Image (cartoon, rainbow, N blue to C red; front, side):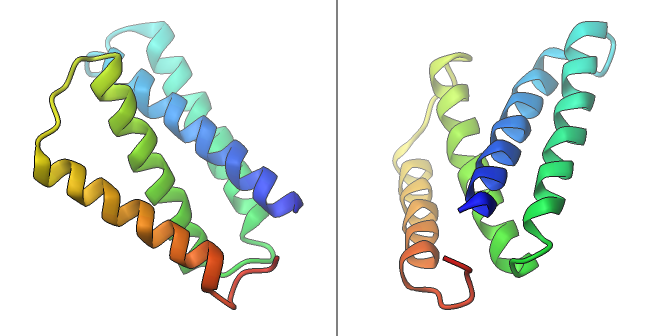
Length: 110
């Protein structure tokens, strides 16, 4: 269970860092740049804790998939970025992939 908590924390820091990355304006703004760098550092730290006991490919798929979904939602809500039907279908496939890994994969430590 601790692995999933670490993974969720890693995803939260990655999403925070990626959201701030848009605000850095090419790392020319100090505060968003510091949030981005510290967020990625913390995300990778917590991700490294998960990788001590779980397979790297599966962990990376879950981390990326969840991050993509959250960043897309933030882009849609906060930055008013439009999503068309193919983008929504792709997000649905990513969610389905994450669900399949979590529900049926025997490579995860439950």
